[in-house]
Image (cartoon, rainbow, N blue to C red):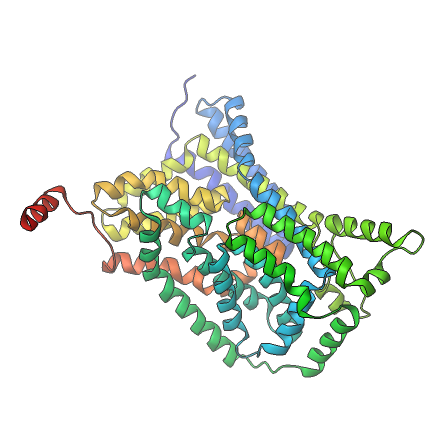
Length: 489
């Protein structure tokens, strides 16, 4: 039996099943839906897609090979996730994160906190080109500061995600910022300049909204609580600028474009070294006393790498604030990523997503509707394949010819791929980016998505620009080029 293309009904069924199961998962399990139920939903939706593929003549061996290949594409992210888990643990032990929290409590005013967090994450992400690294370092500390100031973790996470993805998007060091023009066939810096028209206004609006929330929320700093946290930090850690050196080293490596996995893992190792050198009083409290100090220190750090850092300060809420990390803490996220990539690879292999795009192009008559359709396709690809890279590459390949046919410059497509793909990825709980942010910030995308103003505003503004014809560049027709050359001659 030869392989045949799916019908629109074929393409719709797995998506409908997935939406129903994920909705039921959230309804039944709430915040715990990402800790198993969502994975089962993705498994079941994959099974439905497999049945449709078999019906259309695809052999099981072919589908299984596609699943394995899809999962293999996420292995780079898995290595980073494991390294981030280790980094958070050792940076707690080394005093790096506690020091950031300590100075954050001293310097950040509650009224400006959300806007300042967004701006700070934007600057750092733009400098290093990584939203993930920004969230795992500055973001973790800001969540701790928010808890210390009595501010909403959900709004704080929204500010962190907004800033991190703004900086990531306009940084020439970012992988997605390089990937989008490569797929669309545009120049990198032309792409960045063209993105500024939608990105900068969106970020400015987000900062204004965070400022309004900060000043309109009836929050006054509880100085007693701030002093209590500061005292606990000083009692348990050696708080000084020396503890921040691992952060500066990591940021410098990222700016030098050292790959993310070795950068983060070296940061974790440096945190362990810093703990031994500068947190000796804390180490003495935590190590076992029945073996030599050197051997006990090695065992403690080994444990923190896999299980994370825990501390007993005498205050349960502060224990939660100052504990976390470990590679084991990332295993649930990795499980979710594997299930999502398996589903995405299956529907791509049997042609379900391509069927959707073909149906969309039938209705996309104007430039505005074409760009809107591209953004919608990027978002749907993020939902179905659970990977931001796939949400750039697949729609980019599918729409490139149509943009050329309509005489639209490649920068229009590359910008749209980022507006619809990169930006929306952290808003989806089972997407690799959403799952990562949940693991690092300990706030569900279902909670922070409504406050990720930049990520929500940018696609909408891109659609408004498209329908109004604002900064929609067209290719110069060959005959116009000839006329221009003749006139100059």
